[in-house]
Image 1 (spheres, helix red, strand yellow):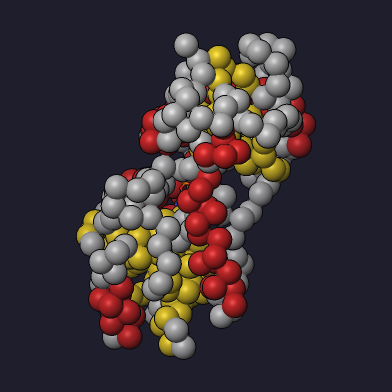
Image 2 (cartoon, rainbow, N blue to C red; image 1 turned 180 degrees about the horizontal axis):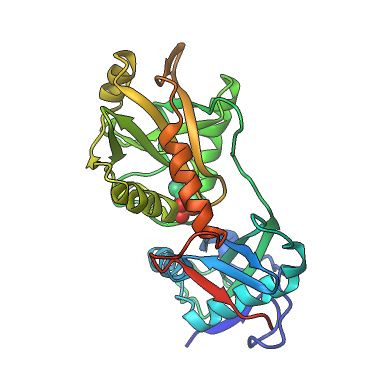
Length: 320
Ligand code: PMP
């Protein structure tokens, strides 16, 4: 029997979100049982806000929770928490294109120092930002450092979960990227295949095909990635899921076979990657950003409610 607390106070009705009291013996402080989602709701019209792929975010939060032995928040709890936060910040959304970026965070709050004690209490706290743009670029695109020493995920590990520790592990790789003037790290599998960036999925356009690195037990199953694949397929573009050894990608970049690379994520959208940097060597893509821009355009039109939601991706949130 798990007690659900959404932010502060028991039960859903009496809650205030975006506040959290933490006591020193709370289990997530010691054992890292913290998982989260990053999702967006968009201004559609006056009094009308649409959440993008809310069911999929809930499903992924539950999958992350299972991996970290956390209780899965029921849909009703998740939906109520999202609506509370949106209601509190709805006034910030005034025009088409405005969005709230939400972080529902699920924490094990049983107070115990016993590592085997069952988790009987969990908190779902929601926080967020207005019009957050994590790594979007108006410039030539990101430069990405190929991280050859450190790993953020490994077979059987927690790479497919959106758990807090993965981002802690990624921090030192990001720092190494920044030292060499790059924006983020490209993480590799133990066998040297491409996986993803620290908070975005990776794509390459090679010989006209959209190549998605296959590393399913290491990569977060990105909701933007899935959306972009769907949109690309509907444009008639061939999408190839394959294991992508980094040496193969670097050779293809050298030979000019890669017309573009891009990264996808809720916090940044579809972002062109200008070049990979491997040690002292830079490997620029051929310089096109055409497909990234086309997919970004299609996606944002649907998200903002300006194009028909033919895929059933939008949940309109009641104006309470
Ligand atoms: N990979 C990682 C590690 C991430 O943190 C994110 C952001 N959630 C993504 C990929 C992109 O996922 P999504 O498109 O669902 O935001």
